[in-house]
Length: 250
Image 1: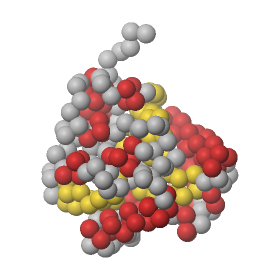
Image 2: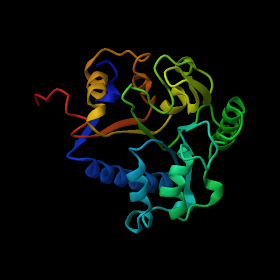
Image 3: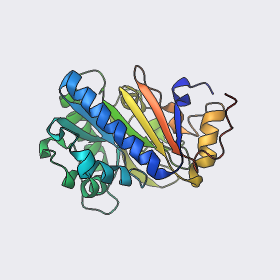
Image 4: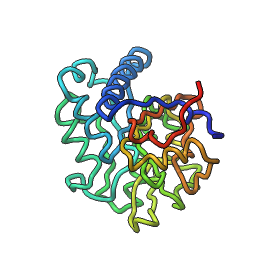
């Protein structure tokens, strides 16, 4: 495999163990970032895999370890639906995490997905640029998942958004889903200090094996576009998702 950061992989016996490790990492990175820079900026993911992570982080054991007043939350992607829609990534995160921890409202940077799709993306990018005031948004943590088709965030196979080089946040039409999504671009993600990819379940096993063992084909497998410029990238997978990876000789 040509993309070196993708080789950093930890495999866990089950999804619960993976989620516990991810929660521990979140707490550790938050503490380090706040100590070093006075703030922790985290990009959250939608989908079913991070649900239990958010619930874990909102539990008394973990929530008490985080200085939530110094945490700023952002989203890697969003469905083009209002915030109260059942499909909304924000709604899922609000119900499982935000409503359960003492984070100030001003620290929660929601994608205004109720707007027209281009306006929503432009408005959110402007919010990001005001916050970071830099060439690219250097998030302390970007949490990602991987779809069975190799997509991540809302960067889908053969979608126009894969080619974007200047923008931070864009509307992206998903050809196979025939719907608009809103997403961080690959360059905005790759500017992060730390990228964590969570992969759960046997349905992801074939794609995970392809990503790690086959030549790069990012148009087909957009997750292969993700490689931090100056940060670290870690994959966490449960044994079911890792079941088709070749056994190590080491």
